[in-house]
Image (cartoon, rainbow over all chains, first blue to last red):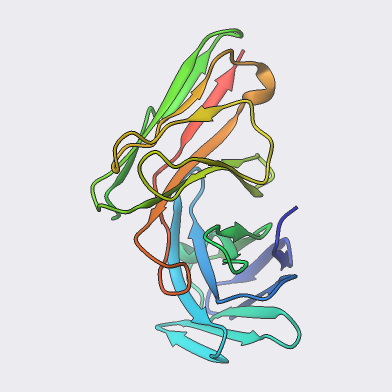
Length: 110
Length: 114
C-alpha cells in the first residue's frame, strides 16, 4: 500500500487563486518531497523538506511539514494555467525506497 | 532536464511477446527504480537497485524482471506480456542517501498489450 495519501484527489481553481494540497503518511521519515507530473510524462522534483524542518519556500511554492500529525501541505500561490498537472508527495520511509502518494490532479482555469 | 532516458516512449505489442523496456542514466547514480503507474495515477514501486549486481523487488508484485550489469543501465523485461501488463512504466534514479537527495525520472514508457 502507498505511504502517502493526498487530499484532495482533484482540485479545480481559477488562475490567480492559491492551490493547497495535503499529504498524510504513516511511518517516520527522514524527508518528504513533492513532485509534479505533466500529463503522460515523468515526474519532476519540486521541493524537499527534512523531518527537522517545519516550512520551506521555493518561488511560488510553500511546503509545511507537521511530523506530529504525519502530514504535509503544498501551497501554490498565484496559480497559472501552466501549473495544471498532478502533484505527488513522496517519503523515504526510513529506507532507500521512495514511496509515493496517490496524487492530486490540479486544473487551473484561465 | 535530467539525464535519464527511457525507450521506447510508446509500445503496442501482442499477448505472449517478450519485451524489454530500456532505462539509462548518464549521471552515475547508484540507485535506480522502476515504478508502474496505473491510469488512476498511483505509482507502485516494482523493482529497485542499490548498484551494480543489486536488484530487489518492490512493494507491488510484478511478473517482470530487471538486471543491473552496468551502473548506467537498468532494463526491465517481461518474458510473456499480457493485457494486465498494460500500464505506464517510469524509471528513476538518485545519487545518494534518500534523506538528502531527490529522484530523477525518465519520461516513461506507455505499454499496451493487445
